[in-house]
Image (cartoon, rainbow, N blue to C red; front, top):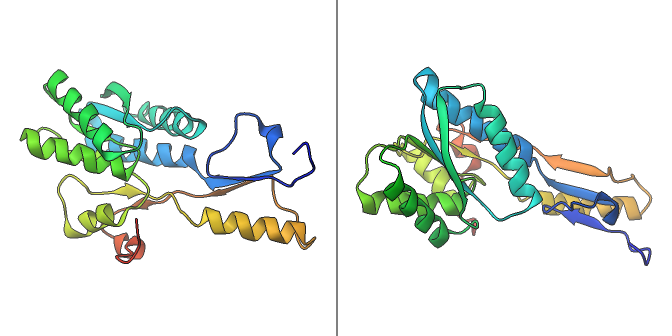
Length: 210
């Protein structure tokens, strides 16, 4: 920025908004809100206990977690037992979930906030033999998770998208702006969408690397 270079930040927003010209990313607030609304609705008025696996300490994680907790305020019978960092990877998430299972005798739902972490959670549940968990919700639209939704997995009934097309959007919008065709907005967000069995086929790409 100091040298006059046009800077477009993708995905990971900056806490200092003056350090970039434009930001293109996913709607992390929407991501967390959709997850909270889904888990709240699944547990309903009877409520239940929820454990949360956060990602890494970052703006993204803060946005997702705040929106999730705000959405759950609509469901006063739903209680968050704890939230710990799973670092957006499967082995760490498995260890966090194993700790939750040893600490809490009843867990109704798990919000993993990322599909890699959700797979670690599922592995921990499978090894533990616990049957109290009713919902495991991840996010990002990983093909393994979408396939579970399509196949009717009893724990994985939904997912939340986090579109990788933001990378292409950033390149396209920046090039158009530099060419003088159209100014790039200071902030562009790709919306998150709830994936359920009804629309999962639209988001299933078996040849995808993720």
